[in-house]
Image 1 (tube, one colour):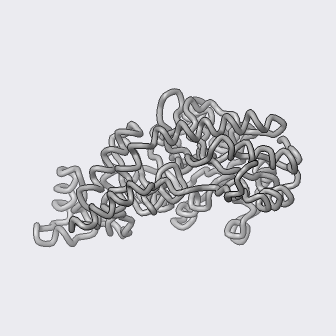
Image 2 (cartoon, one colour; image 1 turned 90 degrees about the vertical axis):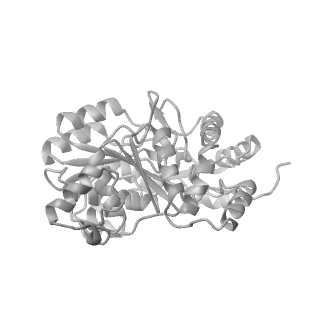
Image 3 (cartoon, one colour; image 1 turned 180 degrees about the vertical axis):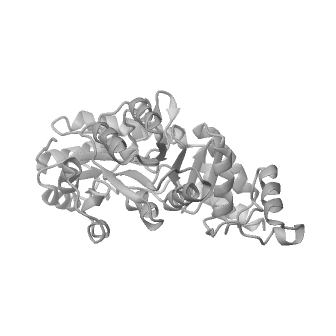
Length: 391
């Protein structure tokens, strides 16, 4: 008979050994704020993703904030129009709204829940956006060849919100490395955890240095391009005494700390095993729930964030799962176009596929601590109560 332990949507990836190592490091009296370990973590993460640069920040939401503001201040954009996904997390698009971008929501497709690429291309032709932000929904890539081709044809900078897809690959390339910049989250229950934390990755060295400045108040002391630093001080007549306290942008404090970076470096060592476990879990779910819609994608390595379903009777299903100790939830947060923050300020938009996700989408637990027995138990309970729905 199955154990009655509660099966959580997410569990901590930081284990007892890592906490012991962290405690020993804390007792060494070393610096806790941003310092050399932050740089080490950034370099290691950039190497893992396959980009030139990485910038450690205090959350995945801050990663998106930093990208949006740096694009605005860097001169990269010919206008302030951005196409964004409807099936996403709120802080995928909130920074663009906060900074005055004209945000256009694109419907999802019925296969991987990424952009409806026909709709996306039509929107590029109609609105001529300077940039677009894509979410790799629950770890799944969309047809990146076609998407990148559309972006190139219409001169659109692509941003990848990869907060749900750390470790996923498209044709052998890590998601997050395919566009102008990618964002990641290291919050509790994500693929790896630094308690709180996030990362921006990119190859554009100028934009990277602008982000370094904006991350820390707008000063130049963190710039890694000496010639860029020298050019700024020369342009504004800044001497070496004033240099440390001169601000070139109205920046933020989005830094994380060496404490979080210590955990990040430790977590990276087991990331590949966690990715493999999440992919195996996803495939077992699919095998055990053959009557239900599931995501299909061209992802060559799937670092599954959760297992998504569409059901006719979501409330009944979620209550039934809860009664058996199984956590579940709406699929991300459904359609952003139907949340108060959007409807209070924007005209209504007809996004029928996202509305199906909004009304009928749920997701089930997937993490490294799930056993095969757990997944069989969850699938049994889903099959007992849920009524399948397809797009």
